[in-house]
Amino acid sequence: MKKYYDEVEQLTLELVKIKSINNSEGEREIAEKIYEYISSMDYFKTNKDLVWSVPLKNDPYGRINVFALIKGKKGISKKTIIIHGHMDTVGVEDFGELAPYAFNPLELQEKLKELKLDEEVRRDLASGDWMFGRGVTDMKSGVAAHLAALKELSTMAEELEGNILFTSNPVEENQHTGIIEALEVLTDLKSSQGLEYALTINNDFTSPLYEGDNNKYVYVGAAGKLLPCFFIFGKETHVGQCFEGLDPNLIASELFKLIDFNTELCDEYEGEYTVPPTSLKLKDLKLSYNVQTPCAAYMYFNYFVHNISVKEVVEILKQKGEEAFNNAINYLNSEYEKYCYKVKKHFTKLPWKSKVITFDQLYNEVKIKLGDKLDEEINTITKELKTKGNDARELCLKIVERVKQLSEDKDPVIILFFSPPYCPHNTLKSNNIEEDMLLKSLEAVLKDFAALENMKDFKILRFFPSLSDSSYLKVDDDYESIDTLVNNFPNWEKIYNIPIKEIKNLNIPAVNFGTYGKDAHKWIERVYKPYTFETLPRLTVYTIKRFLENSLEE
Image 1 (spheres, rainbow, N blue to C red):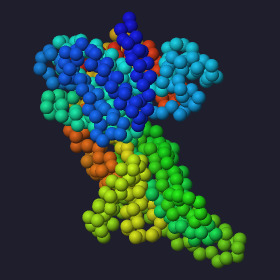
Image 2 (image 1 turned 135 degrees about the horizontal axis):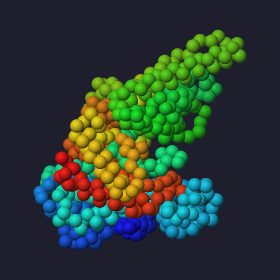
Image 3 (image 1 turned 60 degrees about the vertical axis):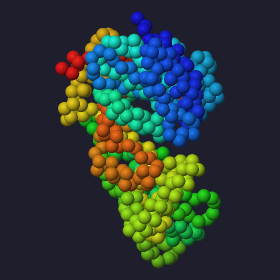
Image 4 (image 1 turned 180 degrees about the vertical axis):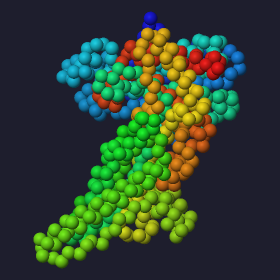
C-alpha cells in the first residue's frame, strides 16, 4: 500500500522546480517553501512557535536554516532524534542544451527520450520508475521524504515519548555554512530545553557502489575531508638561462605524480577504504606572459580520511614533498649534465637543495622576528580580501605568500598548509560501549524493518563515501589532531573557525539512510522512485518510533 509515495513525488517536483543552486537566492526561496509546508501541518498550526527559521550571518543571499520541533507528550523523556538534510544543488552547466529543463523533471524526461543514451540510462528512463533532474537524488527527494515523515510523526505527538527535531540547511555543496551555523541552535536547544540528542538521520543520496550492486546501504558515519595545499617557491630566471633557475612547475609536476590518485594514500578503517587523494587545483602564479620562468606554483588536493590523524597526514605529505623536490633536482642535474656534454661545457652540479616546511614552521619563524605585527598583517590581508569576496582558498594562499615574503628567505621551498573546507570524520566505533550499543540497536531496527517490508536486509557501512553535513555533528579527531590542522591553517579563526568544542560537546551520532539514485552531480542524475518516495519515509518513521521506545534501550 502506498502511504507516502504521491506526496513525496509531488514535493520533490516542487522542490526541484526551485533553482536552489549553491550561492544563489534560490537557496533562500527553497527554505521559504519548506517553512511554508511545515507551517501548514496541523501540529504546527497549533504550535506556531515550534517551527522557525534562522538567517545565516552576514549572508549576501539571505539564506536561512529551517527548524521544526515535535514535542512528544507521552512521559517526560528529553530524548531527541534529529532528521536533517541540505537544500542546495550544484549548477547545471553539465546539462548543456538541456539546462532549461534541468529543474523540470517531467519536461526533461520527454527531452531525454529524444537522445541517444547509454543502455542503463535508457532502460531506467523507459521503466518509469526513475525521476531525472538536477537535485532529484542529491538531495531534494531526501528532504521531501523527511517532510513526509515529519508530517506523519506530527500526528503522533500524544504517543511519542521524546522529541523529533527537523532541520534543513543551505550551503552544503561547498562550505557547509548552513549546518555549521545550525550548531549554535542545537547547542541552545540542548541547554534551554534539555534536549538529549540520541541520533540524527540524514537523507543524502546513496547509490550502487559497483556494477550490478542492488544493495541498499545505511551509513553510520561520514568520511572526513582535508584540503592540503602546497605553495612551491622556486627560483626565477630568463628562459635563455633556464638552468640558472628552479622551475616550481617542475617540482609541482613531480609532487602531482606522487599524490594524485595514489592508492597507497587511501585511508583504511575496519576494512573500509577512502578513495585516493585527487587534484583539485594546479597552477603557477604568473599573472601574464613574459620570458621569465615562474616564481611560484600552487596546488591542492581533496584528501578523504576515515581515521588517520591530521598529524600523520602532514608527515606523509611532507615526505612526498621531499621526494618530489629531490626528484626535480635529480632530473635537472641529469639534463644539465647532458646539455653540458652537448655544448662541451664543464658540468657542475646545480646548487639546489630540497626544503619542505609547514605553514606552522614558517609562521613561528617570522613571528619571532616580527611579533604581533605579523598577526596584524595577516588580519589586514584577510579583511581586505574577504571584503572583495575572494575565494577562501585563494585567501589562504595570499596569506602564505605574504608570510613567505616577510621571512626574507629566498631559498626555494615547498610550504604545506590547509584551506577550507575541513569536514571532520566520524563513525560508530565498536570499541566505544555506548556507540556499539547504538550500532546494535540500529542493526536490529533495520533487520526488523526489512522483514516487515519483505525486502533484502540493509547493508551497513561505517562511512558515507561522499561529503556530508553529518560530518559536523560529531568529531572523532582528538585535540592534538585538530591543533595540527588549526596551526597549519592560515588565520583559522577569521577564515574557517569550525566550532570544534561545540561539536564535541554535542557529539551526535549521525547515520545516513538516504535517497536511492544514480549519477549525482551528472546531467543524468536520477532517483529511484519506489524506494525513495515510499520505503524511505516508512523507514524513517519506523526507526524514530523504535528509538523513542524505552524497550529499545533495555
